[in-house]
Length: 183
Image (tube, rainbow, N blue to C red):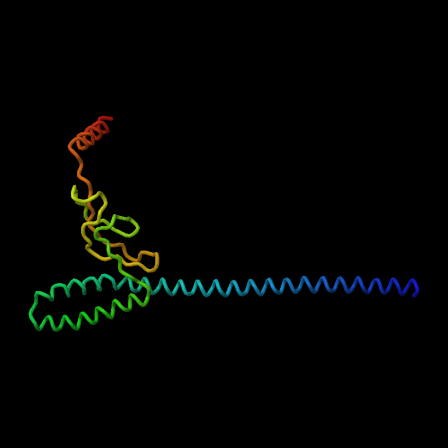
């Protein structure tokens, strides 16, 4: 084999290696772009689902006060006439359907009486000084709270216990206030 043929063969091998390397790079770029496109598709799908979920939750949140009023009205039907109680039975069935809609959309009420106050889940409507219950205990629930997963849709409106201030602590508070007023 002549020198020229050897050089040409060597050059062809180098070209083949360069082409294989270029093909490998294009294949890697293609696979990365394919993965990016798939990730974007999944992210957009997740964002769409979250947007729909938030829209449903916001719409249902608008109905919660009406649902509360419905439940409260049905509580009074027990003391009403027999005819009203028969009507109330039908309305109770409708209320059950509303609760099913909430449940089917992942929205659940949470009950708070006897639990400790949590500002993420409760809204204190009233604070009562008492020594019968530990500080921060929920004594009464005025309106149920609702959650969707871990997200609080509506905080429960509650009455909270507070430890009474002892006369000694009260005197100390008065002295502190007087000291601040003299400055």
